[in-house]
Each structure stands twice: as C-alpha cells, then as structure tokens.
Image (cartoon, rainbow, N blue to C red):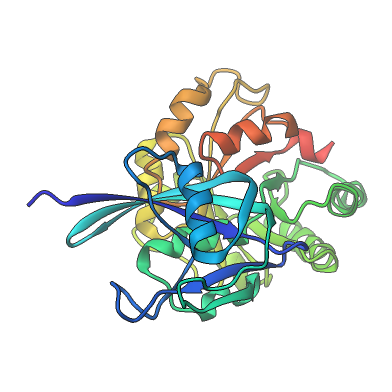
Length: 315
C-alpha cells in the first residue's frame, strides 16, 4: 500500500517573555481528536511552508504573522499516511489569538508541556520548543576558579542556558566535584547542565542529563537514563544519528561542520551534507565544529536547532 503524504505547516508561537507557547486542541470530530497540538494546517498545492503558516494562523487564530524562523522538520509514519510537520518558531505577530473555528486555545508554560496529551508526531517538536538555540560545551580548565569564572560569565553575560560539562583531563573524583560546583552555578541562572560521561554519574550528581560520546552511544541498545532527564549525544554520520533516535536521545550534536584546530584531519560536512543528514533525523540537532554566533541564522535555516560551541561561547 502506498501511503498518502501530508505536508503540514505548524507554529510554535511564543509569548513576549518566551516562557509560554500557544497550544490548540483538536476537535473531537477529527483524527486524534481531543489531543493538543501546535496550531497550523496542510499546505495547499501552490504554497510554501511560510505562506501556508500565515494563512492557517489567520484562519484558525486570527493572527497576522510578521516574522517566523524554521524550528524543526519532523517526518512521521502513521499506519495510513506519511506526515511532514514543517514547524516554525513565531515571535512577531499581531492580534489576540482565539479559536476562530471553535477550538480551545491556551498559553502553556514550557515546563508544563509534557502534562498535555499530543499526537505522537509532536514529541520532537516539544523537545525543540523547550531547548535553547545555543549549546555551550565547556573547555578543559585545570583550575576550578578559572572554570567557574568563565562559566558564570557565559551564564550571566551571554545568557547561555544549556551547558555540557566536558572535562576529559579530570579524574573521576575531581570531575564529580566540578560537576557539583557547575550545577550550583547553573541553578542560579536557571540553566540546564548535562554531564559528559557515564550515565551512572547522575547517581552522584543530580544534573539535568547526560551527554554521550559517539563511541559510547554506539555501544547502547536502549536509553540509559530515565525520561525525566535530558539525553544528548555526539554524532558524525547517518548511522550514529539513526542509532541516537533508536535509543531515545532527546537531541544531538552533529559535527564537524567545518575543520577545527582540535580535529584538523576530520572531513568537514559543510552546510549541504549537514542539511541532508538533519532532515530525516527526527530530533533537534545542534551544528558543531567551527561554529560562531554569526552562523546561528544559517544553521536554523538548514534545519538545525542552533549551534554548539566551545571556543566561541567559552573564551
């Protein structure tokens, strides 16, 4: 049986302070009725995703969309159809949203999204909505004082809210001690901290999650931590991306996009190959490898959640 293909434009519409997102409830008379979703609708044959988004949000919610940015594209297989959710992040709009078709609409805080029932295809969108667009990977620092000063600057001055503690030169005991210090600092600024190491570290430090190396990723056959924690992984090719999705990673980094001083012999992906790998990934993907803030918009345009960096965010 050849499945019908459905292309849908959907919107993650954020409140002015970025702490809430608008949800709509599907009518009980339609497929998966009663579930909540990100508002939008099917593309007409002549429409682009953005044009369809503008039309649907005006028809459904009475909103005029002034500007939107790509967030994530999700391919999902249902028994009778293949659906592509082309999701856009909307921050600039005019009008007061209301259900013009009689549907319930509601502003929901980001940390309460998982309390709502969604169609299965929406899970990657939830993750993308809850994640920032910048992912800080800490550099190797021998001195704890220097490390904490640089981390505090990144959190306070640069506003970074997602941190991976990478410290390969520290032994286990010193890493745990640094992780505890980093966690206390991240808590002050409402930032998430992921530990780059074995999942068992979460038994010692109550961080927000674990980041897996690509080698460690490929040894696992299931998700190694509970669903309430974030799981990310380093990936470099399609096989690793597929395996990350298989074990239930919440997001990944994909690298190297460019040649870097730390990995001069690695073949860079470039933007074209990066986009081809991200399209079917089915989860948020951060571009890594020679990235700076100047690359952020380009990365989002080709499907990335955002950029990850050591040098540009740390120094």
